[in-house]
Amino acid sequence: MAKYDARRTWTACDLAVLDELKQAEAHLPEDAPRALLSVRLSVLTKETTSPVRQELDLRLLARERGYRVVGVASDFNVSATKVPPWRRKELGEWLNNRAPEFDVLLFWKLDRLIRRTTDLSAMIEWCDRYGKNLVSKHDEIDLSTPAGRAVVTIIGRIAEIEAANTSTRVRSLWDHSRTREAWVVGKPVYGYTTTKADGSTALAVEPNARKALHWARSMALRNVSARRMSLCLVRSGLMSPGLTTSTLLRRLRNPALMGYRVEEEKHGGRRRSRVVLRKDGAPVRVAPPIFTEEEFETLQAALDRRSKSQPTRRSGGATQFLGVLVCADCSTHMTVQRTTSNGRSYAYLRCGKCRGGGRGAPDPQSVFDDLAEKVLQALGDIPVQVRDYAPGAEARGEGARLEASIAAYRTGLEPGGGPHSGSRFARERARRALDDLTGELNAIAPETTQDRWVLFHDGKTFRERWEAGGSEAMAEDLRRAGVTCEVRRTKIKGVRAPSLHLSLRIPDEVRDRLVVRGDAFDAGLRQHGGVRHAERRRDGRVRTPLVDCSPTS
Image (cartoon, rainbow, N blue to C red; front, side, top):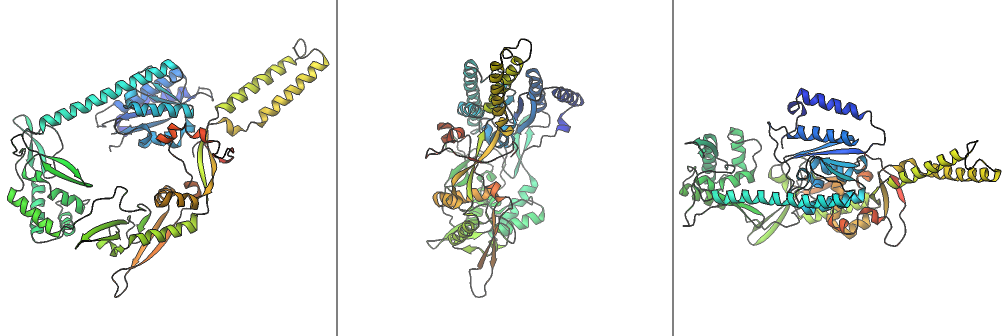
């Protein structure tokens, strides 16, 4: 992803306007609505000025409406069709964890924020639940009125239709070009580069890549392992240092190296490229071949002789505690590798950088069980705390009402004609009412007038939570808390399997990190009305907050 550099994309004139707008914000009242600016771009290039234009336009809109800008969420190279707002890196952080810090979300145009009506519906429900508003620079959007809500839905539907039309055009272009020998669109596979021929784009063989591929083929025919091939190619400088064994094998198995057009095919968790055929069944040639058909077939046969039959990937992943178990020697994640030999399946726990996987440990399940036991001993008795959103609008409204009533009583008690300054009985009654109102106002805690996160005790311990949710729930909580477990493998003379030693690494702030934040945009939460409806426990008792979190927590 390209990095957005303000110093490179903002001109001196833009920066001068930005400084002027920031200075104008200094004169806003303290209770001015706080605005978050959302800037998004599908494709960020060096020449684009859209991010600058979007931000300045939104800051001008904020000044017109009297909003104080508290932040800018910039997400570039992000598709609004594929990635909803709460899954984007910067905007998602604000929506999921920094909601108390802003009151209104400003965006340049609705399609800059959302392109799917389902995502729009989720955002509207989230705004209702958290007391936020959506405002667009170029669309008449205001969630505070029924008409504004209707406009939002209509515009969102139009944006979804536009996105579908764009997808149709792209698919149509690919369908048109896939059976043509001319190179129209797409990224060339490794070994080729684009060039101009007779005014049109064509593919040409990249000399260094051709040399590397033929060198790899000669090693494969000599029964050299793919790991050894990748090391030799990297050391020679023919391929980049980031080359992995799987990447090299994927390159060598691509039939596009024969000059044919290919398309990706997924089957059983594997990605493979297959040749695109014309209506007459002949392959479509789009480039000069790097390998002849005979060379390519002998290469595949050599690779097949060393390959091992891999079982289909499990949908839940191969490692139960992926991201928690790390190698004590190379600090890379431990993963389960499964192979089949002579009809039997074998599983080993291996790391990514140690030679041979660091003497892969058999029986991964025993490692998982040992880790779970250590985690339960160390963290199982910690009470589960759930983060909940507590808006301060109600307390602020009550405070304003009390302040207005107090001011009215004080005015009425002024000598010389106030409504409560007549008889002694009237004055005493007014003073008692004034004292009561003042007591109620003083009883309102200042923090309750602010939007904030509040922690509630779930009533369970993490041991109970993990016994109910299993290893998946435990792994998710451990990753969130930053808990890792180092696996040290020691060779035992005369024994093939190494001895294992697990060391749990627990951060000092593990209790804070273990707080269950939930997903405010989860379909289940939206269906049941969100977190505020969960303030009363299922047994009917009202939960008591353990602690108030600061707005930035």
